[in-house]
Image 1: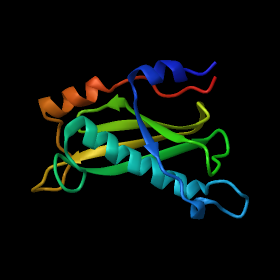
Image 2 (image 1 turned 90 degrees about the horizontal axis):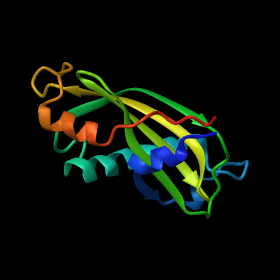
Image 3 (image 1 turned 180 degrees about the vertical axis):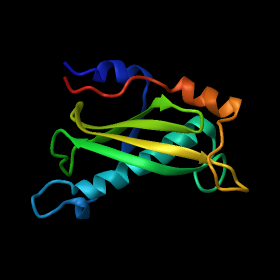
Image 4 (image 1 turned 135 degrees about the horizontal axis):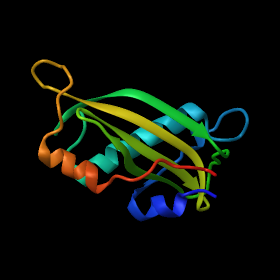
Length: 146
């Protein structure tokens, strides 16, 4: 049994807008487009949590790794929500968990590991206390479909 209910209790829901052109020849939303949707949801969650915009304000960060599991086809039309939360906090990195849902059912689970960089050196730097607190406030387990 999935832990979606547990995740809903801690994650931030971000409604995303699908476009007709997001579909591929098979009649579902293209998997590459889905990765763009979860990226947009990550940015919106970051804005809500920190009142900053990645690349413009707040800690400088880059995506170090990304993994996605496509559980169900994503269709054009139904309301689509990406649930965003933090699954891991390292000394200079953190991992977003993101679960894209339609009809209240998990469709795609993605994890993106972000690394915080020093503005001057461009090298990884430890989280400051305030940023770590924000991450901890939104932390929870990774998604399990079983």
